[in-house]
Image (cartoon, rainbow, N blue to C red; front, side):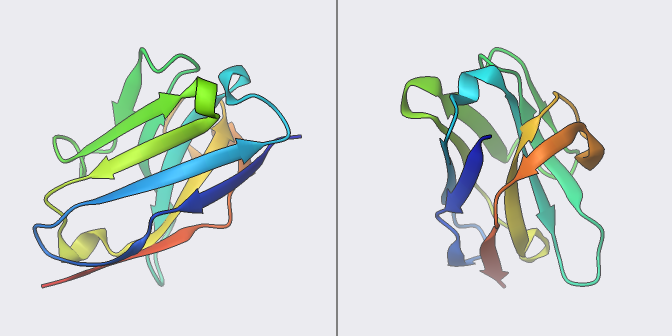
Length: 121
């Protein structure tokens, strides 16, 4: 079973950047498609990005297209989410997940504990 740990969250002003990391242990992440989701208080979990096992194919949620980039380094067993031009509405807990390629939370079977991102105006 794979375990996932996110890091890199924090507080930033609007227009700033953050890079989130998700490091896996237990199994190689090259076995999995990976995704990033986020959840703000009182809201449903929202799809952010997904990458297939090699990283050659990616999907992005409409609200982050052109600002966020998901990459993966299978040799380091780590996936990344580069977040640029951050907005206050990006404030949420960000989760890394392993599973099937796509934008539905139900497609993913393993989740990290989440990392908080707070963007101030």
